[in-house]
Length: 376
Image 1 (cartoon, rainbow, N blue to C red):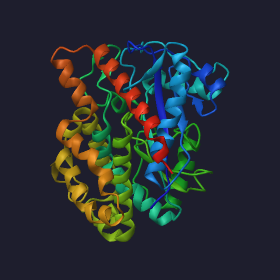
Image 2: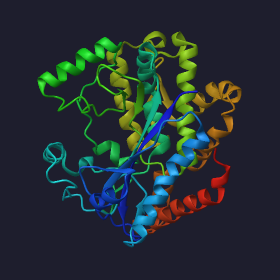
Image 3: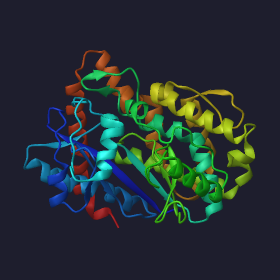
């Protein structure tokens, strides 16, 4: 079992679903939270742990604290990963003195004002880490499809399932499939020298290596592609699937490392993965993707079913099988974007859909309070 931690970005706003920026005041009062460049969202980071019961508590407790603070202002936490009803023309700075925030506003504007989940898995063996990065990059589109929750922007349906991933600036625009740590270090230094990256953190891609002193000291894989997943059981299911894929890889590198097991070369794998990410952002579970093993077309839903079947023996061995159940529900009923869009096309307003999502998030936190004594 790997150490797992989360970076959770959230939007704040009214109970009617309108975004309201208040991050500066929140971070002054609540030490669990940090500011994003725009006032309308903020982030909290969980302490890494191996146990899923502990992770569930760690994910929900900060939300519970934040909600109590917001209640006093008659505000709440908003579902979704884009400014669904917010003003996309104006950047609302959270810190006017922060030069990095100035850089973000000038170069990207509100394209970066999104909410998401970054899933971190601890991998200290560098050879395994870069094998895992290759596998997860080739399958990142599947995780986006399960998490898609941003079909709206500025009061309109955009026509895609993850508007967040469509609009978010992937930087640098061309990221190779890293062969090993030395390749990654050399490439990052080149990007910094050429001005393609502002600093070592300025690698905005579906998955990246992370650690205390990038690019030299690395200890984890960070999956960055997922939209905000409000349902914690689904988020843990997605995380469990990711972890099981990496454990399978560790047990059989030749079968699961795309460099070893694909008919495509590194350049072709990078292009295939980036294209799959965009298809998944547009159509999520209904997307036609291209499998990294042979380049053949496969329906996203079918590929996820293939992954579930592949990890089932290991999941049962590690007593993780029940954790995966919420994924089956998504495959059957659709992800958040698909459910919202179905209601929207049947006449529901974006506001009413956000209000329902707000209520569902609140109910989940209420259930946590009732079950709190069961956490270890």
